Image 1 (cartoon, rainbow, N blue to C red):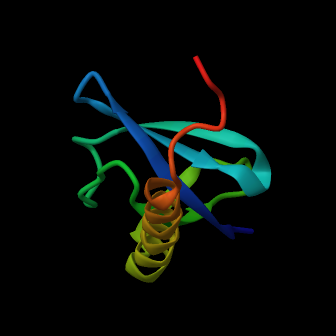
Image 2: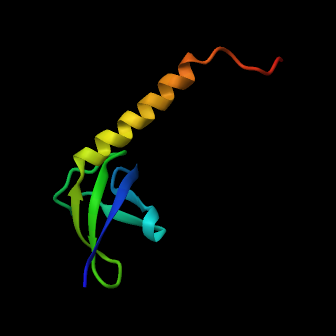
Image 3: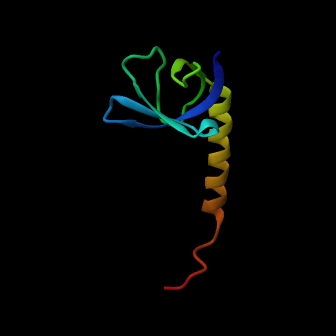
Length: 90
C-alpha cells in the first residue's frame, strides 16, 4: 500500500544530494539528484509517493504548492522590510 505526502527540498548538499523534509511523517530523505528524473532545487515542493516501508517510489513536483509557499514567504519578508528600525537601542 502506498501513501502520498508533501515534502520540500530543504537544501542541496555537496551538489549531489537533495535533502527533502516531510513534516507530516517527521522524516528527512537524502536523494541523489543524479538518479531521479526530476530537477530538484531548494524550495521546490513535491508530492511524494511512499511504499509501505516509507521508501520513496516517486517524486512529483508540485508547482502550485511551491508558488503558494513562495508567495507567503515573500509577503512576510515584505512586511519585515517595511518595519521601522529596531525597538532596542544600542
